[in-house]
Length: 106
Image (tube, rainbow, N blue to C red; front, side, top):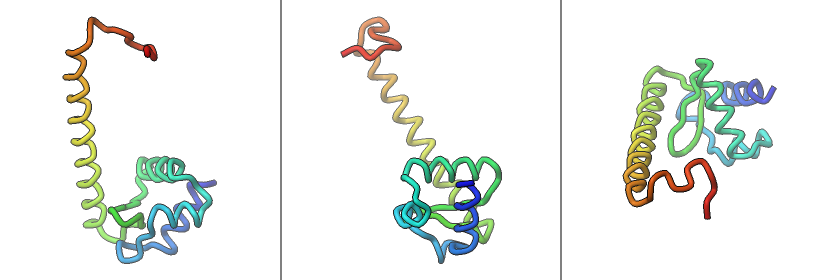
């Protein structure tokens, strides 16, 4: 239900980058939290829906170029996350053998 509302809104009001809407405005228009909006966008993208985005907002992609640009940005995010994971793994060397693994040790 919420997926359909989001998709309908983006298709109707945001066809292409020129008509993008900010995340905050989209949350307000659809009564969603930021986390819910991101989850719905992710779910729709996994289903093959061309929801594109940039730093200014979300939109229903009107061209393949808009999809490619969004893919490039997502790949950059993946690279950043991989670097953060590598840094945290390096930080583990400062800890003893598996101290508090799996728990919430103080």
